Every structure is written in structure tokens, then in C-alpha cells.
Image 1 (cartoon, rainbow, N blue to C red):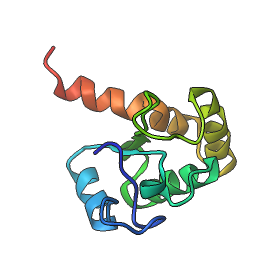
Image 2 (tube, helix red, strand yellow):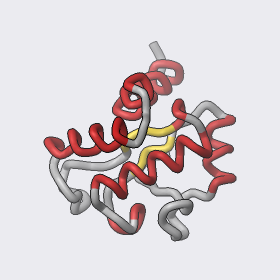
Image 3 (cartoon, rainbow, N blue to C red):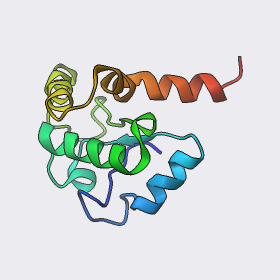
Length: 118
């Protein structure tokens, strides 16, 4: 699931419920947290970190990733150079370096490697 948010931090019909997060985890999937108003309610780095932390609390650290576009399809709060703020926020929130690496691309890589043809 990419380009979404979680109802635990931002109510809305496009955002996933905790039950849906657990279902994605049970199936080995990944939820990509997007960086725009409808998915976050708070588009600051702290808002992004809050959505990621909620997803980890519900689905686990193996089932969350960044899910935003930097191609102009959305009005992101920063360009890719701002990802350092999200990284610092995740570390400051107590995530291990291993789990931060998972969120920043490791989880998506694992799912794609497992499911795409060789």
C-alpha cells in the first residue's frame, strides 16, 4: 500500500485503519506513508514521524516505508533533501538505526525482491 496515511494519526477514508495495517502485516506487505495533507493532517517532519511510529506500533517495523512522491504529483512539505529531518525525527523518537534503514528503503527492497520475477 503506497501513498497513504493512517487513521491513528489522521482520520480519513483514504487512510488505513489499525485493522487494515495488521492485515497488511499478516500478508508480509508494506505501508508507504505519503507526505500530503489528506494522509497526514500535519505535513511537518514530526507529523510524518508520528504516522510512521503509529504504523510500527500497530504493524511492526517490517511493514512501513516512505510512500511520497517528489515528482510534482503532490505538494510535499520539502524536497528529498528534507528527508534528513524525518531520519533525525525517527532516531529522536527512539527507533533503532536498523529500523530506520527499514523505513527508508529496506522494507520496500525486501518486498520487491521477494515478489518480482528474477
